[in-house]
Length: 278
Image 1 (tube, rainbow, N blue to C red):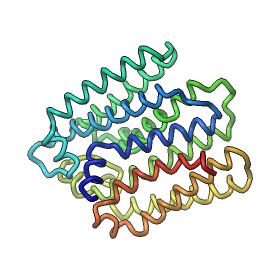
Image 2: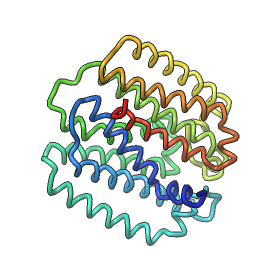
Image 3: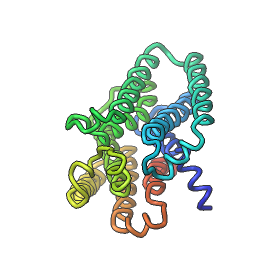
């Protein structure tokens, strides 16, 4: 079982699953139906971006201390590059067949943003700049990516409640990304990677994350009590995710020792699929 989880994590398949569940969550909030080809395109795009990022890390940190994910990508570098090219080619064919011009423009803008992020955080000269906030960029790329399809297929006016759900979701992505960086501090320091934890220190980061988590819990509970309908369901899902993050935060040392912290953190983003079951 441990080997299967490690393979899923190394190939970022849990991230792909979470992105698809989150996209379906966004479509429920906006009351739109996503076509199958968009979900397939999203899955391919997420896998492409995450794998490309890991391949960059593996190649740039060759010879240094790496985590198991980077070791996997270095060991299977050529095979993964081949699959990466095949994935991008397949995604482009699907998009060419079904996407509108407007979708192409939006997707290309997001792709440029994602590639710029990978290049910037991989640059030793730029990665430590104060304006380059790795976790913020990841949160924006991920959230915009999973909400892009529902937004493109939405024909109604987007109200403030849906916007607040998006903002809350994005903050959770930022929180999880920053939280996982706590567990990877030693590796990031040896690889000279710049993260929120390397900037603020471990204790300050834990205090900030705890404060943000409490704020999000209070905000979500208030919204849940005031609203109804699909938005209330959305906030119930977000509250469930926050409660799981509280558990992970409190028991992070034990979960980290089992090697499941990163996997568990990413799998939380599969919970939004529950919006169709409640």
